[in-house]
Length: 267
Image (cartoon, rainbow, N blue to C red):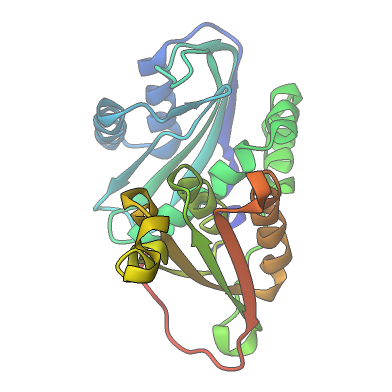
């Protein structure tokens, strides 16, 4: 599934006047639904999601989203509020760019993929700046899609895939790496909980004095199958994390080519 298949100009709006948080949620509801009763339902669902925690993630961006059990397809849209508003953002700064998702309840996996893909676009400062500078919904749409990753839409049997293993011993980097991987619309991910080798070496009398309890720390192995067309971009982003680590230690990645693949995994 590709964002461009669900994001249309009619669901994009640029707001110049002053507005508040509820006003933005109402605007989203009016773009997503034409029936007044359904608009109220969408607004309530969005409001309920915000009550769990703001979808304003800082740096002037937010991704309001909710799921409905009475729709079959995604509704994706963009609202630009030029003056910015208080959206209870994590950094307490005004929010200007809102990319919303109204998802079918039964398509949870795709909902997660879309959230990650949108987050990946909005993390690019140049993409946000371009969107804010545009004057029309058409231009906003073009700017947004320009920064999206290409989506693999053909069946797995007709494509080439790679297998990445990412070993992560740094808890503060795990979420960042997972965010990078889930930006890819067609990938399968598994996470294995593990332990540093020090845990087992510590139990060996010969080496006991060299390792303490701290050696039994965080470790997870992320295994992901993704199209070859996306591999270089993902590797570049992960390598950028590794290169900034002291002695490049705490995260390791390696890649294998897949000769055969069949089936899918749930997120």
